[in-house]
Image (cartoon, rainbow, N blue to C red):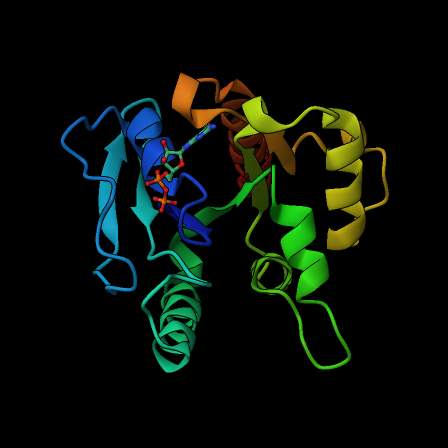
Length: 194
Ligand code: GDP
């Protein structure tokens, strides 16, 4: 197991976070929406693994429904094919809008992408950390994070889930909760390997 994958809807701040995690200043944000790229690999010095940035999914203006579904399929296939090498999955969401988006897309035969991705990773036994980004725009943090837990099937309060729910503000470099959640998963796995 040697990579950590980043997944998330487009525009949640995945590239911004990736830059913070890797210090790769030449990494470009504002890439063309909907263009499926090869996963981007970056080495992370403190541990011997890579961060893999997968294409953003969900709504992107000017990108057709078929294309968006194809992106989601490609992401799922990549993760399935590489599951044995994936140390953890970071599901990046926008703290300001994630609960509304989940609620808008929940229905009798509709599962929101974020929820689907969360359960998909867990089914593959890949530890998931939900990086709840843009917390600088959220007023009632605890309430929002509790609602998110509820939507993901985790019993609130969110404070019980600090290895899974990591509120961050990537734009300001405030990503400590994510780093410590990841670190906890790595240590757990090392113990399991003994
Ligand atoms: P990506 O499409 O997921 O890769 O998103 P980007 O990293 O390109 O960011 C999308 C937009 O969100 C940009 O305008 C970023 O400046 C903004 N953004 C990223 N992180 C934060 C954050 O922590 N807080 C706020 N308020 N905006 C952010």
